[in-house]
Image (tube, rainbow, N blue to C red):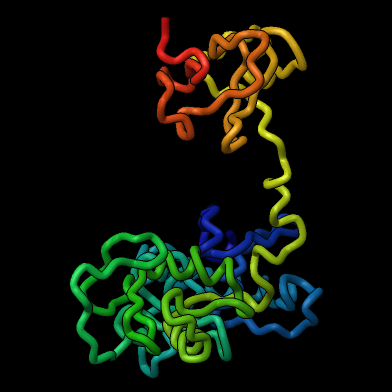
Length: 289
């Protein structure tokens, strides 16, 4: 990226990489470059940021030093009056700075960022409802609280990647109380990016993988000379799928199945079979001779 000088591929943090004619810029670096404005139509330049304006911004920040990594090219400025801190977008994210994705797209350094001031005591054993792991005992940069119910405490990374980017503006709500209004307003304020589109599961082809038939041998040791992907209709390399889940398979010979075997169950589904990796003795031959 010409703005942050990084090649980060974590789109949850920096957004998509925009590129044309040798110019590479992260989406979020564009939106929060303090000297850039969207002066074009959506289809012009990158999201309405015109190429001449981008080049001008690159010149402007060429000598500005990031207050976090100390390298040049810092384009994000804390909007608090009289604060002189400037930083690269990903550096700010790592340091606890907040960049908002609404209105004027303001950015704040770690000292002046918005905070949650909720008079609430966390219940003992509270877990993030998304990853089911422990959260901080008080609201902070990495731990956010739903303002509506105050019962949902979650990690910033979880609510961003696991909920906001997937659910998007039309479906994003508190995982527990299902509030949308207060919840979205507060998450926007705290720097959560909520894309203005439909949810990921509503996109065309979102469930295509569910219609794909499993087509490989998952035995602990595959004996087929042609490899695990080989699947024949008959013979030793006939592929049988688990009769219960359909998501695991085995060659007839790889699990010592007879030619007349019509069904097979994987180790996750068959709790009464002798398990050797995924090589199972069918129930019909249990107990083994």
